[in-house]
Length: 348
Ligand code: UT7
Image (cartoon, rainbow, N blue to C red; front, side, top):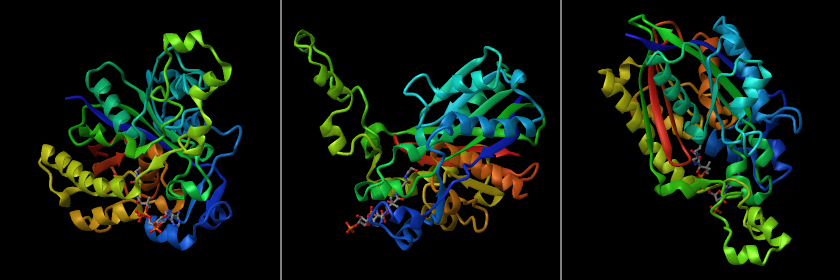
């Protein structure tokens, strides 16, 4: 039976550290509030120019390929998950393909926000299991810092996010005790607007024959980004934090149990849970609700919420620290905007 193994893992964190006290210079917040509500002490911000979502993803990919003992020419598919792409289009996948001098392979972009990496790895798993590809590069990368409302108006969301990237190379294995056992993906679009960046977006305005007849340059610009949109902060991410928190607390345990049940395991069998780093309080809730004491990996304190990058960064650090060993049962789980959520159970 062919399964998908993680053959190599990598990460990249920008050097620039932004502490909670640094944020106080921009908005009405305090180190104490941020630590108490989220657990975050600091996060990384990429350089304003030169360092992008794609370049960070590429650095993480280099490390993952090196650890997998492979190189760009051997990669036969790229999957890139992000909500903060370099360009509105094309996606970051092709930028990786170009920069790393890869063959003319497929490059797929995934936009499932905090669940981006779980979705991306699940897609890679299907391609490996069917035998379609043998060496897939899966990347999660975010440059949130370019698009956060750093005024007090945006403080409930801007203090949470940080920049960074993680990547894995996945390959087939026929070993009994290694590889992805199952993946579980979910969504509920009824809450799509509770955590969203509304503009620019095609919902905002649309052409009509009458409008075309009455062509007006200012109006055209307004369709893409109007003064009203900016005044309502709709060009930045918006979030109903408590509503997201409440649903995360339900869906995280549910989807972790789903993965365990599918494979006939108990919570006690998990060696390490690497959850999406949304809020330390959510991770602590999971740890106590599921009875996972000491078996939940957290680094949100140092990096904030890096959305699609948080799971591969966490998994990479856990591996570097020796907390992930060959044969260990590892659970990855995510919840976020969409809402989308998911889990992956694997043997390292
Ligand atoms: O990864 C994607 C998924 N996202 C998440 O999982 C996030 C889930 N939600 C959360 O983590 C939490 O809801 C937050 C950390 C975002 C907010 O914590 P909260 O305990 O839910 O606070 P709140 O939004 O209910 O706000 C409580 C108070 C409000 O003031 P009033 O109305 O009580 O006077 C806010 O205006 O805290 C205020 N507040 C702040 N104060 C200082 C909101 N943000 C800040 C801030 N600094 N940064």
